[in-house]
Image (cartoon, rainbow, N blue to C red; front, top):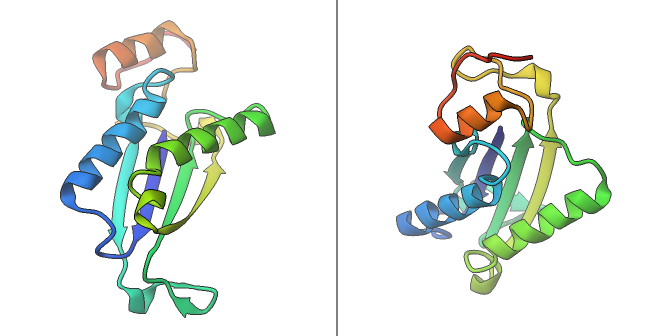
Length: 142
């Protein structure tokens, strides 16, 4: 499950921007996991409460990604992913003159559940079912 927390100045995104960006981020993951695995939280932070380098950050966005469902096999894979994310966010961030930072934490796969169900392993029949139904259900295989 990727969980994105996006810390941003209040004027950075409109409601429509948030909806479109959330859909585009989800599309990046959709070929590889169920869409409902992707959670995105936008947190507007007043400039009096957001500092970078000890100074108020008026035009700054911080993307904190928590990856649980998948791990990057190597540095090149993580760089490809970050490059792809930078492409997706560019129209909302860089093209608007905002500064940004991305960081990703990886949590071991075995340390999560959804609706009380342990998620299926990648490439299994259970995962294919979860993707097709777009909801969790009991696993039928380990």
